Amino acid sequence: MKRLMMLGPPGAGKGTQAQKLVEAFEIPQISTGDLLRAAKRNGTELGKQAAPFMDNGKLVPDALVIGMVKERITLPDAKNGYIFDGFPRTRTQSEALDEMDVVLDHVISIEVSEPELIRRLAGRRSCKECKAVYHLEFAPPTKADTCDKCGCSPLIQRSDDQPAKIKQRLIEYAAETSPLIEFYQGKGILVQIDGEGDPKEIKKRIQSALGT
Ligand SMILES: [Zn+2]
Image (cartoon, rainbow, N blue to C red; front, side, top):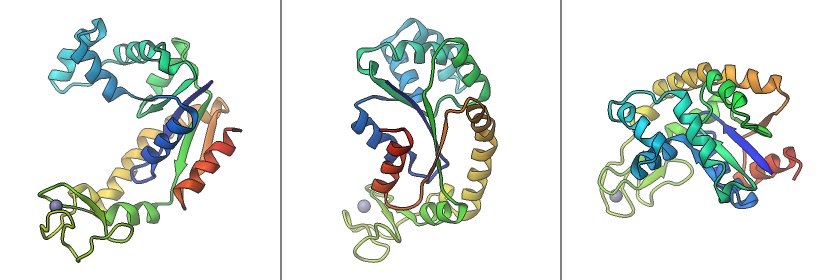
């Protein structure tokens, strides 16, 4: 059984690593955004209760979110475990998970220095026509500032990926996450992983930290 949760700031490669663990352990990745949309679409009881909050752009109450998570982890594909992504988001949600006897084995925190995160995020560019994504350093287009797929130029930088905005996002992430980190550290299940270097190496670090 591998009941995991992933934490990591924007640009840490959390999504990439979660995908590798999905394949390695054959367990599903569970994100509450996906769960909420599916419950609403399928018209489940919890979905019906959550719909008015979602339609009005309001936060769905923790009890509903956790109810959905609890249902989701009883499905057959989660029999060997699961990876929570973006959940729990707050200390209240982590405590509520405890109260509902949803147990986590490991909380994986992927840690990357601020200069490296800025390097990764600030180099992102995308094509405004076909939405192809590039990176000035890691995946540059063949011809400078021009989309390989459709020839559109210039490539654009999302406002979120400008250095001042990145710093702001990192501050918000730290404020949101530090109570969770403290909570899981206190339980002795926090696994801190150096998220710099080759993604394959990082995957190995995670697996060895989990004892697999
Ligand atoms: Zn393009």
